[in-house]
Length: 345
Image (tube, rainbow, N blue to C red):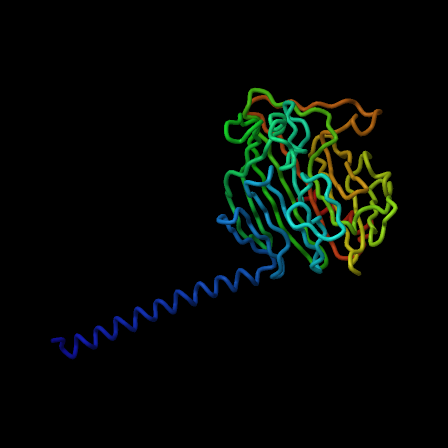
């Protein structure tokens, strides 16, 4: 039989236990609420092979590294007003969009010729008997996923493998930092990509298929074909070249504007003075491929010297790029301000 004091102690312990449970729940709820109230926050979902990036409580993009993809990608990409500016195919096809180039997925980084292997064009559409010619970029680890001073910081490690990820030789180790930030009217992704040679020698040839690219929604393509309903895209680069003339030119930045369902958006890619071959050439196609390429030279312009980048084992090369998506048509002066901000950091 329990004494009155024993019962009192049991009740007190029970109350303490319940209080602790309530306190823990409150702290967890408060932490989640604080996280969601951050201008930028990251949600790691390794069980789904992804990291979700939220800005002002809304999904901006997702870092996806599913095994079915031949490289990690950011997909989809939303403008500040929620407009989806990236193409849906092949992950989630939308009506009336092109279904070409299944390797063009979201916003990604790779290259067309590394030691003779094609990392750019690899996809599920490549027949198995031809896979020996194609490289694959495989996500390895998430090293950091935090919010710092209003910015989302995602650090990841990847391996560039050839030709098959089951028995492949690792050619390159990639360590990349994504910095996700925003202000009123625009969202930004700074991608700092460091590639370290793991094989004895790594050779990047003068190839047009590269490097940081986005495949855009149909509305942001250039009106070049017979059926242009709703197609409103137009390029402008830092040197004043417009439309299809932006392809292959050297420029510090390129803007692609267009209007989708009444929403006008600007998509901007930026080179950095620290990058090799600055200012880069641009693989900016009318059909919706928008890409900056620091290693392609003579392949774009016969007047440029043919280029080849060679990394010896253990040597590291780093690229810095910025992607901006903004509401409205940003003027060149506004883009220059964003560019100066980028190169000053």
